[in-house]
Image 1: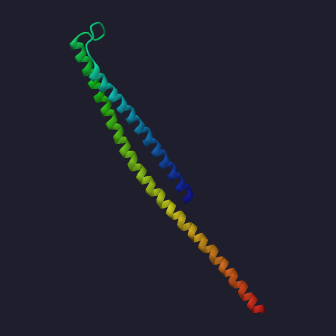
Image 2 (image 1 turned 60 degrees about the vertical axis):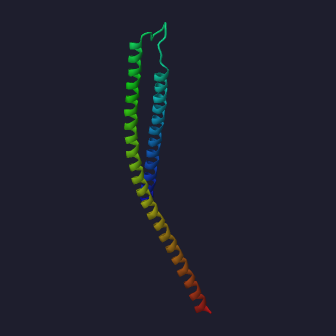
Image 3 (image 1 turned 120 degrees about the vertical axis):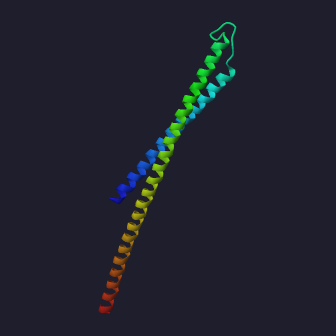
Length: 134
């Protein structure tokens, strides 16, 4: 039973670590998108003939990109909060897993002690029987 609980906690910890990795990859994607949008803001200019041919439209375009960056930063902050809560859960799961691991080790030591005690008793009986016969 303890071994099943130990394995369950290990599996839960692994799942949380995978969740954390997925969220961290989302943050990386958001960082890339933020950087690309900032580069677009820096390189946006007025073209003679094209979609952006007026300074007012260019300003609106840049403001729209800045708002997009703000939205991405808010999403990134929310994901960071999720990661923090997952880290706390991982720590708790690891603590529980270590406790069950310790219990398993203690049970293993007890079994070994019982086996050694049984072997010692058997050897004592053998020696006594030899002594009695002899």
